[in-house]
Image (cartoon, rainbow, N blue to C red; front, side, top):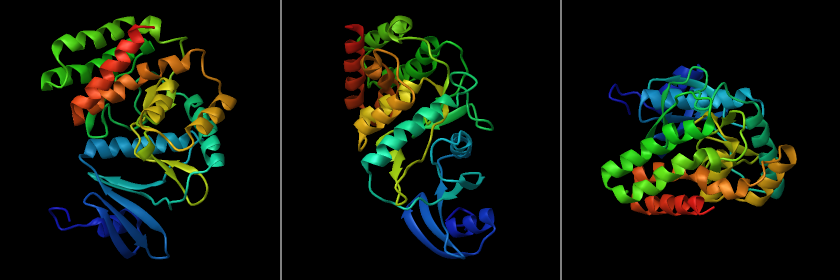
Length: 288
C-alpha cells in the first residue's frame, strides 16, 4: 500500500481504465494484476519518480524501433509503472538466434548521440539502483570515459571499494580509450542494462527485454553485458547478431573494455568483488 492507502490493483484500474479481477504480490515492489477479461499486467513501484519515468520512456523507445519485444507500457504515474505481463517459457536455440538478429536491428535504429536519453526520458536516470546521467556526446571513447567509467570509479574510491593506487590502473584505460576502442561506430539504441535477468524467455517462443537503462551508446556494450552475467544460448545470440550486422574486427578483445562500466556500477552497489573484476579487465586491456 502507498501512504494514501492505494495498492497495485487500484493503480492498475486507474491507469488501464479496466476493473481488476485479481492481484498477486511478486515482491514488495512488484505485483501481477489480472484485469476484468483475463489480461494480466505487472504493476511496479519504483525507487523514485525519475527512475520510473526513465524506465517507461526506455521501454517506449525500444518498442519504437520495431525490433525487439518489450512489454507494452499501460501507464506511468509518480513511482508507479504498469506494463504487460510476459508469460514465462523456456529458452531455445531458435529464440536465442532470433534475439541476436533483433538486437542488431535495435542497435541499427540508432540514437541522436552517445548518452542521449530516450524521448521524454530524464537526463538523470538510473541503472539498477545506481544513478546514471545521460549527457550527450559525439566521441564514444571520450564520452564513455567521462560519463560511464570515471563517475563510478570516483564513487568507488570515495567509498573505499577501490584503493586510490588501484584507481590509476582504470584511469590509464580511460586515457587509452581512443586507441583501445576499435573502429568508430555510430550511436546505437541500447537496452543499456542487458544482463540475463532482464531477458525473459516467453511462452510464445520469443525473448522479451525488460527493465532497460536505455540510452545512445556503443552496440558492443549491450553484448558485453550479456557476456558478463551469462545468457542461455549466448553463442546462438552472437551468431544471429553477426549474421545480421557483423561486428568490427577485434570485438571479442574489447568485451572487457565494455564491461568496465557495469562492473564499476556493481562495485559501487555490491562491493569489492566487482572492483577486483574491474581491475582485472583493466589490466588485461592495458596489456593488449
